Length: 71
Image (cartoon, rainbow, N blue to C red; front, top):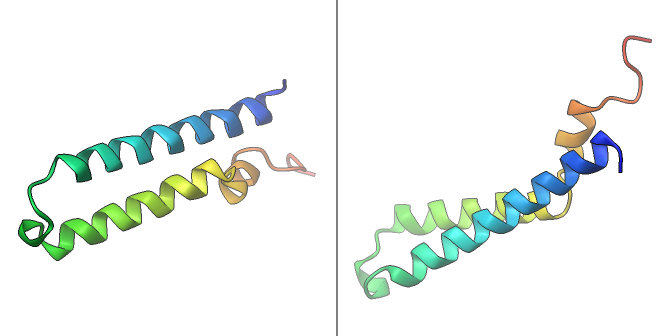
C-alpha cells in the first residue's frame, strides 16, 4: 500500500467517524422542533463532507499527490 492509498484510506476513516459523530449528536438532541434551522444545516453540510471523504475525496487526494511533481 503506497502513501497515496494510505491517505485515501485515512480520509475514508475520517469521513466515517465524522458521520458517526454527527448522527450521535443529532440523536442526543431534544425534540426536533427545538433544534434551530442553522444546526440542521450544519448537520447536513457535515454529512455531505463526510460522504465526500468516504467516496475517496479524489480532488483532495490528487491535490496532495499530483501525478507530475514539477515536470
